[in-house]
Each structure stands twice: as C-alpha cells, then as structure tokens.
Figure 1 (cartoon, rainbow, N blue to C red):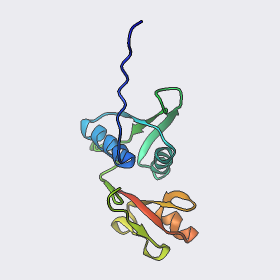
Figure 2 (figure 1 turned 90 degrees about the horizontal axis):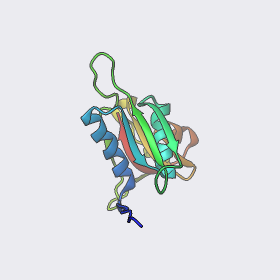
Figure 3 (figure 1 turned 120 degrees about the vertical axis):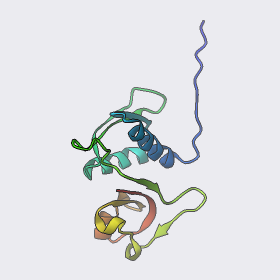
Figure 4 (figure 1 turned 180 degrees about the vertical axis):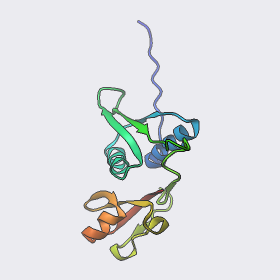
Length: 142
C-alpha cells in the first residue's frame, strides 16, 4: 500500500497567513488564490467581496482537511495593478488591539476599511459604528 504524506502546517496566526497569501498572490500577478478555510476567513472574504476588493469567491468544502476558499483577485483594467493596495494586520497574537465604539478607526479618512471582530460578529468599522459596538481591530484594507 503506497504511503501518502500529508503536510500539516501549523499556523500561529491564521488571519496574518490569510492576508499574506492574498498579498503574495497579488505581487505574483495571480488571478486566483486558494486559502485553507475557517469561519473567520470566510467572513473576511465576504467582507472583502461586499466592499469591492475582490472579484469572486467560492467555498470548496470537499477539498482538503478543512475546506478551501478560492478567491478571484481584482485588478484595475487600465493599470493592471491590484485593487487592494495594502493589507495591514493590526491586532496580533502577541499584542491584541481592542477599541470601544467611540474609538473605532477611520482608514484613510473613510476611503479604506478596518475589519473589527465584535461580540455581534466580524464586520467593518462602519457597521460597528452603526451597531454601536467595539471589539478587536483585525486589519486595515485600502
């Protein structure tokens, strides 16, 4: 019986890994990036899609150990540059950053988004402001 080697990579910060995979795929000029799935990463993907930063996404539950998220990256037609200019991880495992509803950040004076993990779920800072909730600042996207 042939042996199948499975490589299991332990990632200490899955959100940073998610952001880095998107960043690296854009630098390489890839159209699609595949990322191991989790509930948090699915919600981050939905937010990026709703805000117009990615073209499409697909959750493939049958692939891999935990499923895969396939993201079609979005590029500007004229300049061929990625729509996402920066992805910055704010709250890290070694230093968490929490804000109250009155201290929610504005990214580039409202042109970018901050993604916040609140008690009512993961959402943008604009939705958190509407719902009057604070939480952990996961990342900035612009």
